Image 1 (cartoon, rainbow, N blue to C red):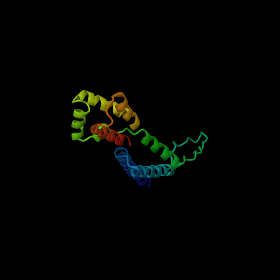
Image 2 (image 1 turned 120 degrees about the vertical axis):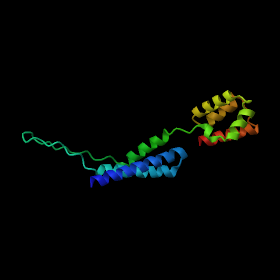
Image 3 (image 1 turned 60 degrees about the vertical axis):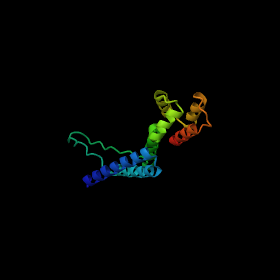
Image 4 (image 1 turned 45 degrees about the vertical axis):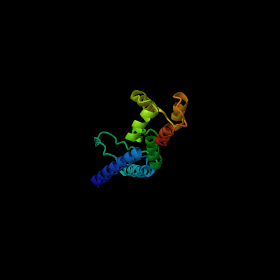
Length: 163
């Protein structure tokens, strides 16, 4: 019986890892919901597992009976863990949001062909926490022309990246 329980825990854990990876990589709410469900199942199974047998007491020693504390609420624990994972999920590199043509076009048209300026800007944008912060930096600090169609396209891609 215990081997079946362990096998089920292993399978659920592997499924949970896959769902969490999909939720992280694709920002997929359905995968996150599946991961929550798997986490709840794992927590419930762990609550059902019998405790490891204690070492046998010697006859001269009185036996001490330990009362196990009630298992924590599975839903609350699973939600807290998964919400923390979702909140700390690193955002993929901004360069992955740009096509090869975009990379060449934006470097040529916005950054006057300077690869170092373009890469420094992308690195800085990657470290920012919101689309508004990124847009303010591009328009305010770099003084890019907000009416330029290339700048508009660049900002649109950046805003999608932060969603």
